[in-house]
Image 1 (cartoon, rainbow, N blue to C red):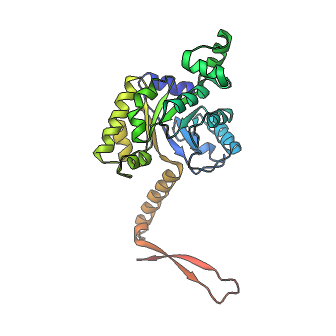
Image 2 (image 1 turned 90 degrees about the horizontal axis):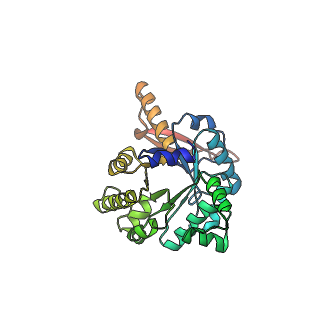
Image 3 (image 1 turned 60 degrees about the vertical axis):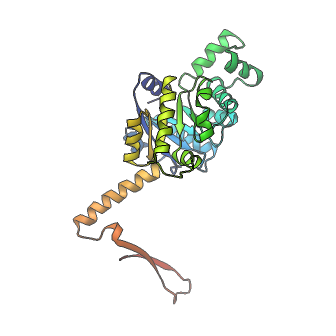
Length: 287
C-alpha cells in the first residue's frame, strides 16, 4: 500500500497491518518484505541508531516493495518530521507527545512542509495560506502523508481530546512499555488498568474518526488490541518475527530428528588455553 491507500482503507473503517523495523538496516530484504503481505512498516529511529541516508534507502526499498514506510522520529520536534518526509517517508510517528503545542507543530510540518515560520502557524491555527494556489499545492504534495501522534503517558491520555482537536491527525499510537510505566504497572499489558486506558484511547479517538495503533509484541496481545478496536495494527518487530520463525522451524526439525529442543540445551564456552592466542568454542550441551 501507499499512504493514500492506507488512509482510504482506514477512512472506510478498515484495518491495515504492519510491524516495527527495529533491526533491519540494509536493503537486501526487498524480496522477503514484498511477500510479507504487510501494508506498512514503522522504521524506528527513536530507539534505533539510524542516519538520514539509511532511512532514505529503507524508504525507497519499502516503496518499491509496495509497503508504506512510516518513520518513528526520535522526539516530538518538527525538524525531525521534515527530515523523515524529505527521506521519502509516507508518514511519521511522533512519539511521546504530551502538549497541544508540540502536536500542533509536528502536525503542521507533516501536512504543510516546506511552509515554515509565521505562515505555517497561520495555516495550522486559522487555515489561512499565502494563496489558494499555495494551499492546493501543499494539499497535493502531502496527499499521502500520514501523521501519527504518540499517546504514551497518563498526562497525554488526560489531554487526548485537546490533542485530537488540533485536527489533521491520521492515527494515535500507544506504546505499551511507556504507557504501563507511566501508569505505575511496567509491562503489565494484561492489567485491567492498562486495558481500560486502551479502551479510553480507542473510544475517544474513534469519535474523531482517528484509528489507533498499539504496538503489541505477541499474537495474543495483538488480538486483544484488535478486539478492543485498534485498526492500525502494528504487530511485533522484524527481529522478533525472525527469531520466532527460526525458533519454531528448528524446534520442529529437532523434534522430527529426535534431538533435544532448544529449551533443553544450554550454552557453555570451552577455552583452549594451550594455543598462543586463546579462543573459545560455543558448544550446546544437554542440561
